[in-house]
Length: 368
Ligand code: SF4
Image 1 (cartoon, protein in one colour):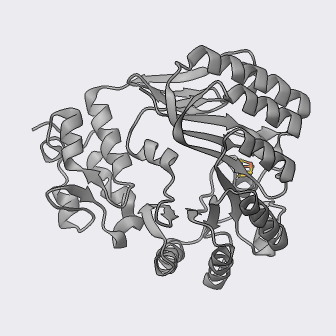
Image 2: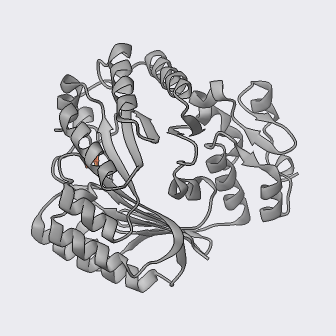
Image 3: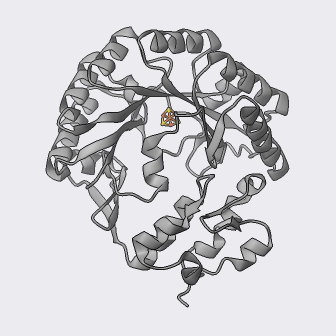
């Protein structure tokens, strides 16, 4: 049974300078056509599974006008939800309001994820983001007053010319909002973004690592548990939807550019809007071998602070993980640790997670 579904709403009012996500400019008539095609996709592929998590991401789902948002949420009512279903929607501070929040709550949405990135006005302007501190405070208060306390904020660091003090101000402001979940991302300058075209340079590696470590220390002191490389939560507020991915469980992905994992197949939907509107949904489909599944299991599992549950791995694949992968070299380097129950990346090496995962990437796996 599939327990999770992701729904992608690719529309944005402005395009951020660093963005390489699957997004398109908001246009009212295109959104209407998109919703028609999305509904068709869901009706074609959804198999009546009872879901524990639903995540509406983007893009910026809250950019839909109230009528379109109602239409989206009405159509998603077809998805069956378990009693405690975690139902998240991504929002930005400029496009959410009281009416939209009421509608979301009416449809069962109980978690909201906001893209703050930074509060530094100079940096926000470089990112082409248009909110300000007061707007953030007002919207967070409004969301809480409506009864949604399960709130995530995305924080972006290692921005061009950002210094440690800028990051400290962001963190201190975040704490003043008293929210239970923080996702952090280091800025990567990806091809085809405005930053890339304008030859904007990333921070050097040392600054990047220093900022990552500052975030780890700061949030730990404030009682946030780092439960994944980039994610921190107060007790009881881990994002169950994202844990589906890191636990290597299957999930539906609906919408432009969405990825999914169903019945041993991983798939990517087309990123071409015209194709999507014509109902050509799937772009790439990969049938997973048992070796592929074990590689995914370890690479995704190592993202979690607790690491890989070795017994669970055995139960799933009838093999001991150390009989499948050779990770002794990474262990000797201190990039991995293990005991009888778990295999994990130590806290002070999480910033080197790519190196730690090398033993599990295609080619370097071996059968004993
Ligand atoms: S709001 Fe998000 S998806 Fe939209 S352009 Fe900015 S980063 Fe990209």
